[in-house]
Amino acid sequence: ATPTAIMVGTGLGAQRGVLFKNATALESSARIETVVMDKTGTLTKGEPEVTDVVVDGIGTDELLSLVAAVERESEHPLAGAIVRYAAERGAPEVPLTNFRNVPGHGAAAEVDGRRVAVGNRKLMIAENVDFGTLMGTRDDLAASGRTAVLVAVDGHGVGVIALADAVRETSAAAVAALHDLGVEVVMLSGDNEATAQRIAGQLGIDTVIAEVLPGDKAAKIVELQNAGKKVAMVGDGVNDAPALAQADLGIAIGAGTDVAIETADLVLMRSDPLDVPVALQIGRGTLRKMR
Ligand code: ADP
Ligand code: MG
Image (cartoon, rainbow, N blue to C red; front, side):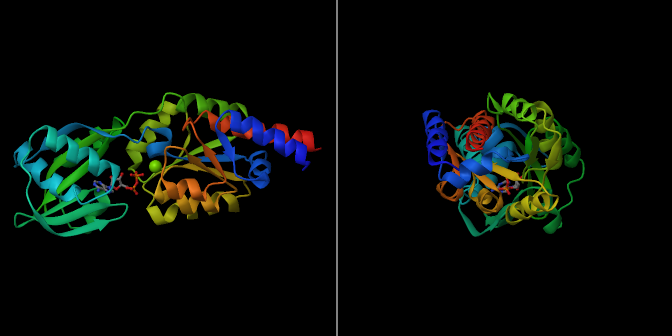
C-alpha cells in the first residue's frame, strides 16, 4: 500500500463522512464479498412507534400501565416506545418489584402483586405461557413487518403490542448498489423471523438470519467466514460490537452507540446505508492505485 494511495482514499472518505480508522480498514474494504447488516437502527431508523394494542380479558389502559411499569426499567428501544405511548394515553403509573431483564427475550417483574412478562415468543415459552388465539394476531402483525411484543399476566397471554420502525430512506438503494458491486447482502436480526423476512423483502435482501440472541451475532459472522467469505458487518448497537470486532471490516452507524463506534474499523458519520457501497468503492479504488 503506497502511503499516497492510503491518504487519498482516507481523504475521499472523510469528505463524505466515511471515516476509515486506519490503512488496514481501507484495504479490507476493497476485498469484502459479503455485507451483513443489522436490522434495527441500521437498515431501519431505530425509532419504533406503537401502532396497535390488542387485548384479551384486560382493559387497554390497564395492560399499558402494567407493561409500562416493567419497560420503564428496561433500556431496550422497544421499551422506550411503549413507555412513551402509555404516558401519551394517560395510563396510570404503578410501582413494581423484582425486575428481571432477559437479554434477547424481554423483561419481567411483579406489578401490583401480579407477575408481568413482556417480550418475544421465546420468553413466553420460557415462562410457560399459552397465547391461544392471540398468537394468530401476533403472526398477522409480524407478517406485516411490525415487531409484535407479547404480554403475559400471571402466566396468561393477555395482549400483543405492535411496533413499527420505518426503514431508512436509502436502505433499498444501498442494497441495490451492493448487489451491483457483486456483494452479497445478509440481514442479521434479533427480531422474529416473519418481521425480519418482510422488511428484507421490501429492501431486496434475500438472506435473512433472524431471532439471533445478542451473544450469537459474532458466531454468525464466523460461520460466513468459515464458508470462505470476506465479511463486513454493519451495526449500531451494543449487541453488535462483538460481531463488528469479528468481521473482516466492522462498520458502525454514526448515530449508534459509543461501543459500536469504538469497536468498528470504519464509521459512517451520516448514518446513511448508501455510504456502505461508497466505502467499498473507495477501498477498491485505493487498491487499484496500489498495484
Ligand atoms: P433487536 O431489538 O435488535 O431485534 P434484541 O436481541 O435486543 O434484538 O431483542 C430481540 C427481541 O426480544 C426483540 O425484537 C423483542 O421482540 C424482544 N425484546 C427484547 N427486549 C425487550 C423489551 N424490553 N420489551 C419487549 N420486547 C423485548
Ligand atoms: Mg441495531
